[in-house]
Length: 569
Image 1 (cartoon, rainbow, N blue to C red):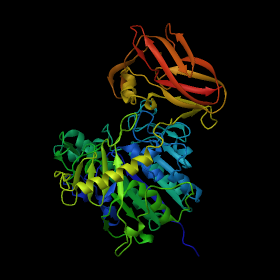
Image 2 (image 1 turned 45 degrees about the vertical axis):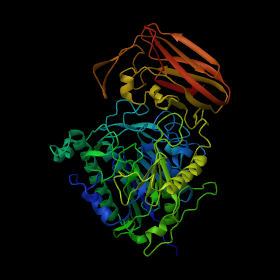
Image 3 (image 1 turned 180 degrees about the vertical axis):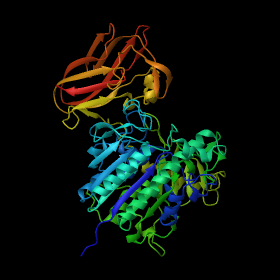
Image 4 (image 1 turned 45 degrees about the horizontal axis):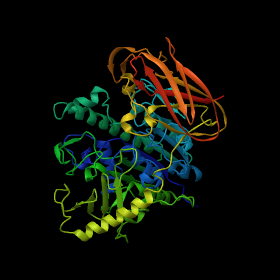
């Protein structure tokens, strides 16, 4: 009789770094439940991801280096995971698993990029890269928010992290008699630092206020991890559940760094750099795997170089999943490293980088890793076992190692850059998404021209760029243009009373004209008074298209229209 397939619970947090845990030696933060998980897990101590969130998630979900998947930024249309990528959830679903995601997706908010388009049978997520981003439901502030349940807005009571874990537990209890993949990617402890005061109080007076709130958010996560593990034990599921905990990039708030990215204050496990830097503190993260039935319930450190692209092939091996032939991971299965004894392991190069720009630039904010060697930005060389703070540049002493790592990078660049010039279009006219909401979060071009957060909408940020679209069906389309989203339902020229802030107020703009351009079609309409939307009907042929919108104020200032609702007539 064959053994039952293991369940998988995968928890990943946002902007928490390697040093933001008690088990990592942080002298202030309290994380007893994650510390216990650490004590009972295989710990990958040299595990690397992207230096920011969406790139890391693209690598985890596909086993491919994030640049090749089209995801090299968090906004500007480059957090959309290419349509032809096969996701980890696709693989689990095809192998008979129930699949669910509860929290932060950040790989696309429109068809065909949403989580329920990519293998997740159940999906409750916020929009964009964080609660309060432009694609998110208007006015969400971490408490009693409205999230998207398979694309439809639904209100939930409680604090965001508590909601994600509560939904994950509900999913587990409903599918306890069949194998499941439960993905809980929290948006905490990413800013803004919203959390109940009782979690913050223990840290006040020990660290700056933002860090106290950041640590409070992590303590809340820790409490939820403990509750989830306790319930798995009560349900009799803990033994055959692979429980994974990791974070998505280096710390954002656990330390402060100087211009050269050396830590000035805070705790970062002795590493240089933090989120969005090519140094070790930017992309080395904790990764714990616990699975009693598989023999992984006693603390063991794996010190070999591993990465997020290894996650998919490794889970496939542990769960006995059949991978489609078209899926050729860049990562490798690291199960041999988890076994007792001396594994046969071939040294390899791993590359990560940060490209928060419209088009990647070779060598930009890059780290090439081979064993304990690190080549930073193509020129600085460090040996992190002897020099974990990356202070001693060895490039002049070991030129041959520099050349080897540069060669590794060249091969990587050739692979990931093949599709840089291709569009990654949002589809309109699909029955899978009858009404498509387009927002500035995914405007292409200069990311300074992208109003990616609702704060920008409230403040009437002057910006504009285009969207990449694909018209699925020829026919007539209605484009409903709005300055405010439907749930706020105010006139173009109207402001929102109250003090301007992340969750309040809104600047009045005397908008006099709205216009739209798609392909060679252009249309405009004058706004005389209290119009809340302007709708244009256009005949479109199937195929790719670029869309740009305009709203002109009385003083001649032109902005893009912040919200566009598209439907096929």
